[in-house]
Length: 223
Image (cartoon, rainbow, N blue to C red):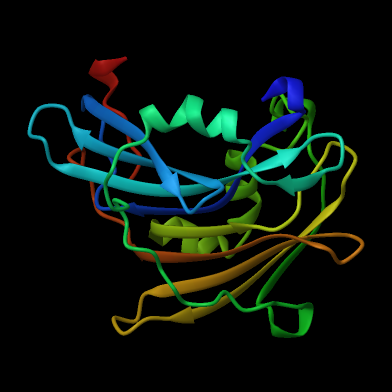
């Protein structure tokens, strides 16, 4: 792949969290890859409690090839396909895909807008793209009260354009409620030029009180 100037880039990711691990928990993470159409790859993750086997979180992602010289998507070469196909698992995605179309936001339809977001050096991956974790942090630029009283239950991201070290971004969020009255959000990250980088959606639920009697408290005898 490197000789052909090809790299894998993530196109879509969906994460569902059943329960967050707490202080002292042991977790087990399993991951595997599968084919996604003729030219794509899917990677799934399963996070479980290391003792009980309880499922804590599931995630599924879709990947495509990009040519680093042209910055355009590329078909998978036959020799690359032959090399990686033996590692593909023949299984369905661990997360059923949320087929709802993610709507486009603008400032007039957003409840929260954050301007002037810029990458730092440690936000970049080996290909000089902003890494996926940073995108999630920017997307969650929403109401402080919601972040204080709710925990993230699910997130869907659609990656539309690469973001590099010199880019300046804007984060937009629109908030609604689901059938239970819990928050649901639609998100957009875009460049200052208006080009869309990531569309996303998040699902939230009220925070659970942990075993220490308060949210986020760490026992002093464990330090």
